[in-house]
Image (tube, rainbow, N blue to C red; front, top):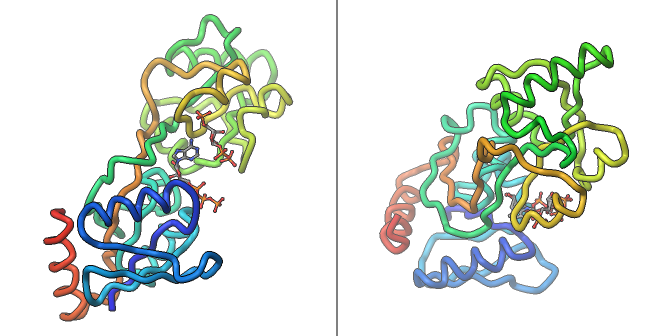
Length: 228
Ligand SMILES: Nc1ncnc2c1ncn2[C@@H]1O[C@H](COP(=O)(O)OP(=O)(O)OP(=O)(O)O)[C@@H](O)[C@H]1O
Ligand SMILES: O=P(O)(O)OC[C@H]1O[C@H](OP(=O)(O)OP(=O)(O)O)[C@H](O)[C@@H]1O
């Protein structure tokens, strides 16, 4: 049996079921509260329902052969993600952009270069580094290093991140946005350089899962049916 990890709740779960159903493979929860499921339309595939945030780790550990989760979560949770998983299909839903946002009233800050300049000025004035609240530590460190921005500190925020500016625990934030409503409601604007990462639900293959001959044959069958 190859194990396929699927988000256990919400829209990501429903859209994943729909995506596979459109390709002739149906999945259903056995009972509403049980985190196992039935797969029909193909032999040799077992579904495991997991939190979207845990699927990257399960893939990296090889405890599941395949997994569906946001491309942002794989990049954030796995160091060297692209040597541990292979992207089989971008699934076309679960779109969300990881963006950097600053207060609307920072009229001089529109781009990352502006933020870099503002961060240097902030440090001179306040004696400590500009704080960026986020739960995306790895992605942000890599992005800011890649763009030569160093005068900042990340502060951890696992939820309600947009509120940290108003609460004065950070000067800027980096978070996922889809409609932009949460940013607007908190009087924040995104930098015009574009998102740090444009995320979507993606089907991944675990490089280190037990790929014996039977598992490889099942994978080939599955890929044929999915057209990926
Ligand atoms: N509007 C949105 N808000 C938050 N996440 C979104 C949104 N749209 C798409 N996503 C994506 O959904 C995924 C997160 O899903 P979800 O919150 O179910 O995961 P989780 O972290 O496992 O949740 P939990 O910890 O509550 O179980 C991420 O890949 C994220 O990019
Ligand atoms: O652009 P929008 O459509 O307004 O969506 C963005 C919001 O949705 C997510 O939060 P979620 O409600 O999933 O809770 P979280 O903060 O706990 O992640 C995200 O963290 C933003 O706060």
